[in-house]
Amino acid sequence: EAGVTQSPTHLIKTRGQQATLRCSPISGHTSVYWYQQALGLGLQFLLWYDEGEERNRGNFPPRFSGRQFPNYSSELNVNALELEDSALYLCASSKGLAERTQYFGPGTRLLVL
Amino acid sequence: AQSVTQLDSQVPVFEEAPVELRCNYSSSVSVYLFWYVQYPNQGLQLLLKYLSGSTLVESINGFEAEFNKSQTSFHLRKPSVHISDTAEYFCAVSLHSGAGSYQLTFGKGTKLSVIP
Image (spheres, rainbow over the protein chains, first blue to last red):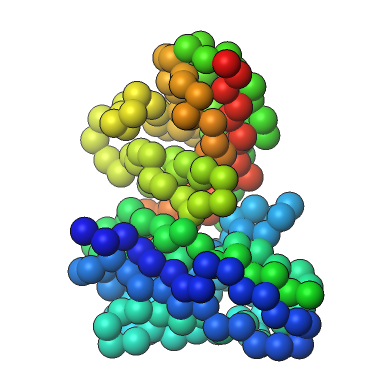
């Protein structure tokens, strides 16, 4: 069974640009979570999607947004990039509301110059 | 709000020695508990979890953790470490109920270095 996949693996952008990160969950999983792992700040929850709906978001500004598609894959968009957005962005999936265990992908490393 | 404290940021240990990585949590409601491992330049891998039932949980590679409700702890142990165990270990919780109950709250991680 394939795990969670993320693309691209690395992304380099300049300040002010927009970044789009993608995630495909494990087959049969309906929930997708996004986390940011920034140096010195640890792992922080960003967004949670289930069945195409945004269920919750963490303490991040509105320029962090996303969506979940009918096939349960997800996209994270970061607008007006700032230097401090440089981080590893991790996607995780689970079997929706009935399952609490989250399985993580390899991450997308975003560097903002 | 819930929080997770991993008391040791770095733990060096000799190969074949035992190790304990400490994790304490704070929450006003019941929690589910997880340990994840992160190897350099990789994502997180689930090591073990406590959802319900026996408070002692084990992984396939020799790690174990015990949920202690009275001490609000979920320490990770291994009786004999290998070089390949060198990695960063994260303790995480999610709430049984309430607002924000599904996302994970992580500790700051413990870097385990196994010395040959």
